[in-house]
Length: 468
Image (cartoon, rainbow, N blue to C red):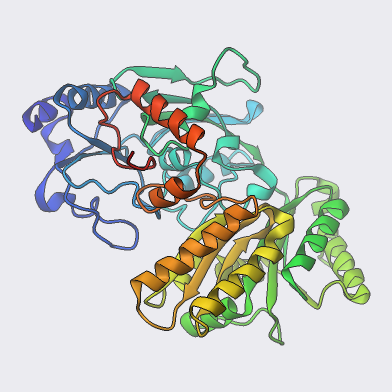
């Protein structure tokens, strides 16, 4: 089988032995099994040929992009890893249509840089953007800090090209905002984590680059009060809030200890710290006045000042320059490092309705108090869209305890109309949660779709769907 694979894509693009090491570890360095080999096709036709061979020989396939996932979705012990890294071209940027056509291996940061030359942005931003690829982001329906204004990856995609488990190429590279011609197979493949096919290219939406951004740290009495702050800012700015991020006192203090040179956001310590960013594309709001301040920054300061006088917020610091803005973002984007800096740690990706976040955090506090009273909660949240990244440092290394804390928190979220997976996907880690919480009829429908598209079960087997 490997000899035939070398004939299809070239011997240099079939890696075995030690050459697979960097592919067989996730972003944290943890091993994910020993693959049969790593195939590096350079075109959609080559991906199709590889998949046809795997389907013929019943060889399990695991697609891999930047390998920045957090759920074990690229674990490939004994399977053929299919890397899209060679398919990294940005085929076309069409500024007038506000879209770009990109291959699946294009790294997000490269897309950001390319479209910036046209005064545009592709608004999918998260900490791993320097290595994450658009194919993986689509396959997991990634989120990030700008979901509040622009939506998830699914919302940023007009069309895709993909190779089905049989090796057939499905061309859905539509550049349309409206197309009601039957089932939306694009959305079926987005978020499927490579279990239904391999995304090879996409048509993505672009947006005007903000002419000015203004970023602030705001302290409020409770997380529930942050929703009042968000709604007020959205009304005052015409829904121009781009990011609305929650960091508790324990997170801030851990960050200060961990990161050399880090500074606290305020002179005083507060329990609830919010980072908010507002962006504008209107020149009238972006052109600095005689004092050097942009109108949007002056307006944000005025709104925050009024809310401070009303007692709705406790404190606020508005970034006065780009260095201060980047310092605020660096504090939030250190979350992966902060939340995994101790062993043991519990980390879960949870969503709840935005108006129930305070209630959920109160439940989490009770869960921690009941199961491990001395544990530390360093959770952070994309608060504007209700996505909490649960982070807990238990007092002692007990795998069963860690599991109970995480599972009980997920159960609480689901009981409140939330989800046990907000933006990281299912992979291997959350299959048990799928079995506990997913509607049985929905699960059965997913299995039927999987069987219909992948009758030989070769495409990323053992992921997402629990065993029957």
